[in-house]
Image (cartoon, rainbow, N blue to C red):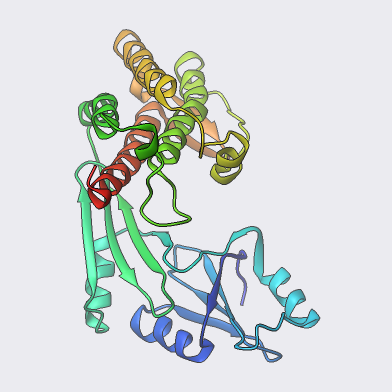
Length: 294
């Protein structure tokens, strides 16, 4: 069966049990199972990517050369291999439809969250320690997008208010991003996206080509773990005020577009994405503060 390459490599404890869970409980489709070893290829949904599952051998043996060739053939070159406890996001057209389907299959431990005008999410835990997050984007008016985007500066500053340098390094758990890292990441995403927004505003309709953004490479290369954040927080407010001023001044600003990777993106869509992304990390900061009582 043809596929575009798996973007996920999941390490599982029991391949047979995992296949049964993913196909019967979550409704995934088994595309192929290797004859030479504990490797299988599954599809999550008809409008999403293919997932590859590789069994974690009790003896911790490495995969054979034949299995390695199979993995190379099945996987995308830039795939991810989530660890236990990680969230794995799956875009869908209707979270409510997914929820009804999973409930019909007997899934009971489902949790749904909604950020009005931005995103709806459904959290589903599997038997291997992962949590899948089915998500859909919600419609919002231009006025609602501007309001969400403008509110982000106060929300970030309130989230980190009063924290010491030591507390900025608090995290949900060892190996997870700290408050400091969450903050620097969300601001760098804004910096990267700001370039695209300015091209859309200045030269509507043009093609835009930018470099890919690797959050892990930037986190390591820019030393998120140890850097101060206060200058960046001030920059965050200045950037958003700058864009809001342009959108107020220029006619039809939110409708202006660029074409990136054969996809048209409007200023409204980009602002909505940035607002939602920032809100996600601000919520994470508040959760860390609640966990540590600070």
